[in-house]
Length: 368
Image 1: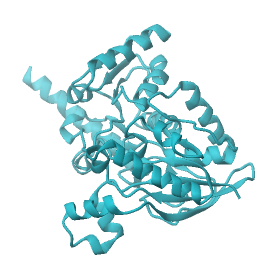
Image 2: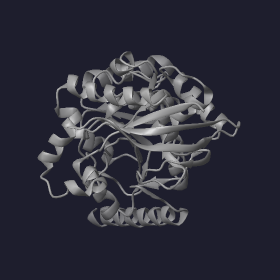
Image 3: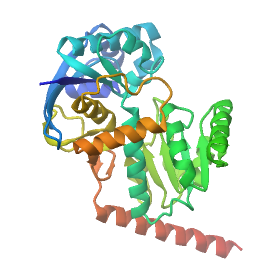
């Protein structure tokens, strides 16, 4: 049976403490030091992934023992060496393709150096992440009765590979599109690309908070290690698709803003009787889209470097979406902060938003 692997890493020290209780008594700095010294190792076997075409594959999760903060703060050569070590372990276990999870797909040149140091195919999964994030956003907008063509849409982190590709796909269908990031020069370049490509004029902003405050729909996909969107940054009724890991949206939004719909980008139902033998906070038989891309390519026998580097093409997104549908992968409903959202909960958010908007209108009227 053909095999694949996917590289995970702890997002923060707390994740390590939850998994390995004996480190709870140690200071965070000591735990981080232990992680630097630890080798990559296999977390679990993945079984039961079966295409609707009949082909079955198996795989494994391999841990690269560095947190998100460490991947950003430690010397790049050291971080890349640790990720390559995890990739070589996957290779040794018989995997023909390995997926890069979370920050392992972000550091350095976004997987290119890692692929050059391995004898198997490598993918970041970002193409399928784009495809499913846009599907989820459109579904959420429909449930919240937001007309995408008339909505104020903001892409936060638009200069990254995922954000830029989302912009290219959405631009023809969205009248009011704002690209937000910190690098104005890069934003201007992407805006010019969209204008030349299909005549779409978009706004750009380097002030993330100001950009999102008027937005009906937000797709956020930065590489920040900290949350960047807080409760006060959002208007009632807004839909936020948080594709970033670690997440861009503060957990306080879920606690304090019952009038805003925050969804996780790229949550996918995996075909077959899949068992990941590891709990990463999702219901059974579901995974991140980046994981799913690795499985899709393995089922297709497409053992090649598929999504690497800072550029993703619309063609790549369309191809992986087609292959995913072919093998039976599909969007797994809507999720928010590691839990499934029911239609009743979405309806309650919509009603809360309407009530708060009515209050705002009444305050403006009385002020006048």
